[in-house]
Image (cartoon, rainbow, N blue to C red; front, side):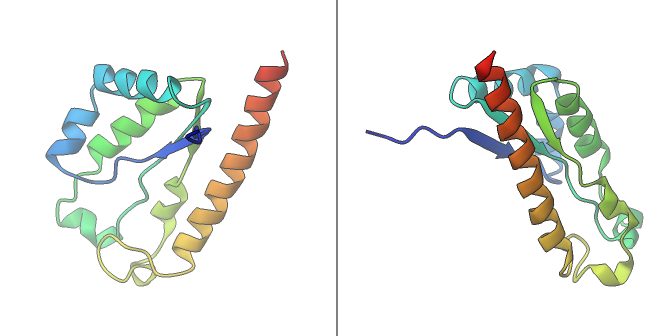
Length: 128
């Protein structure tokens, strides 16, 4: 018997044209409907920020920010908010997009906390 997942964690990242498609309300609604047909808990991980100088190179974060805000507008979606990464320095990245440690370690610990809270919330809904 196949094991049914209970949580899905998604993130869009910075993918240029693909993020433009994903940033439509209809597409996001379809993702959520498809996900909730399979799982009880949906977590959206916001896209962490790039190296500050990468913004000067034209890295388009506007679509990622739009996607993040659309997912955050749904009550049943749990959000892992990584906006704190905008406070990181140039030296906190090993290239324009990828953080040095402990950046990802903190992101992963944060995700564990969001999962724990999401599971508590899901259990409370089931008890009602």
